[in-house]
Image (cartoon, rainbow, N blue to C red; front, top):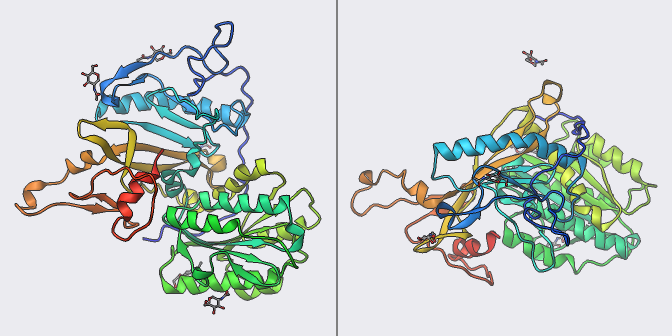
Length: 452
Ligand SMILES: *[C@@H]1O[C@H](CO)[C@@H](O)[C@H](O)[C@H]1NC(C)=O
Ligand SMILES: *[C@@H]1O[C@H](CO)[C@@H](O)[C@H](O)[C@H]1NC(C)=O
Ligand SMILES: *[C@@H]1O[C@H](CO)[C@@H](O)[C@H](O)[C@H]1NC(C)=O
Ligand SMILES: *[C@@H]1O[C@H](CO)[C@@H](O)[C@H](O)[C@H]1NC(C)=O
Ligand SMILES: *[C@@H]1O[C@H](CO)[C@@H](O)[C@H](O)[C@H]1NC(C)=O
């Protein structure tokens, strides 16, 4: 069923109180000591014990740990504030586990970027000292946090985008792709005097934002180069027609539609294009990303965002890309918040490489639900706080199937709303390292590639 409703506008930022000297158990820093043998800040002694239910991994069953992506400051006041109030989840996690000992990982992924996981476990960075995991890029998070959407990404490849700007623009597009999931549809058009669908074989349509398609389009981004002048009116016209035609095919999300505009400026506001295609209903939201430090043309882009229920963002450096791109998710999740739609989502089956039983790796699915602020003063502004989730072994789902009803030759299978297999007698874990898309192998290939 379409999950989208009317939308309101409003600011999404909440005031945070400064918490000084508040310490929490950081998943990476726990039990780490400095040269003098003292616990490092945000570390501290954290008792871990091997646990049979968690495949003999060492865990702490009374506390959760908090992970913050390496590229974020782990004492940022917004993060520390969120970590502080979400401490109350420890009790909930423990209670849940006591009531249902079949539960495995329980977690909360915050819209600010931190990830609280129960039971507590130590995380180890990769060989470069990096933990790239950002809960907000995970499928369960995206699926639960946003309504399904059709998105056209317009990238300016006119001459002024040469050099660093084009690099930032590519990264911005790539980060936008990270925020799209199986419920979403997209295409990418580069424009100067002409329109260039980055994948010419898939022009004039939108494709599902599954992993294979996103990776395929990402490869084409490297082929973009900047020259000529940017004809934004032509590009916007194409995007509106594309979205409208696609909606009429009935194949799309049937929900929100958006145009992401990645450019270093707009010389006018293109009212005539918006008047023709988008006003007064403003069904298509516009999210302009201004690339570079200059803000000479910022006002036009700001106005476009405002007049089309979107959100304006300036991205000056490569380091800014990810956080700034994420901002639009607040705007697109707002309709769900306002309607207090607490949809539960299930991901397709995947292999959890940290857990296995005596038959080898186990198939898992994640069930997740968005979390909204219910404070009176923020309620109608629609603030998404994050997403809660838990991993469920597929074998637990199988236990609920009434086998006696199926008869001797009967068997049960389940597929998700996106057509991925959740369970089937012939679905067996296969770890495939190089993923090639071949018909019929789709589900198995996915399993190998999805999960860290
Ligand atoms: C979890 O770690 C805390 C802090 O080290 C410790 O006080 C607590 O006893 C541990 N819980 C368990 C169940 O080991
Ligand atoms: C965990 O370790 C115990 C004792 O070493 C062993 O008996 C048990 O089979 C192990 N469980 C798993 C799931 O590996
Ligand atoms: C899309 O592809 C078709 C067939 O290759 C071509 O005729 C058409 O001009 C293309 N349209 C655009 C906008 O690139
Ligand atoms: C898409 O089509 C449906 C049904 O025709 C319509 O209700 C909806 O408003 C359209 N959505 C957009 C964003 O145009
Ligand atoms: C919040 O709003 C509800 C319903 O509008 C009202 O009953 C309640 O008293 C309000 N609470 C506060 C603290 O203002």
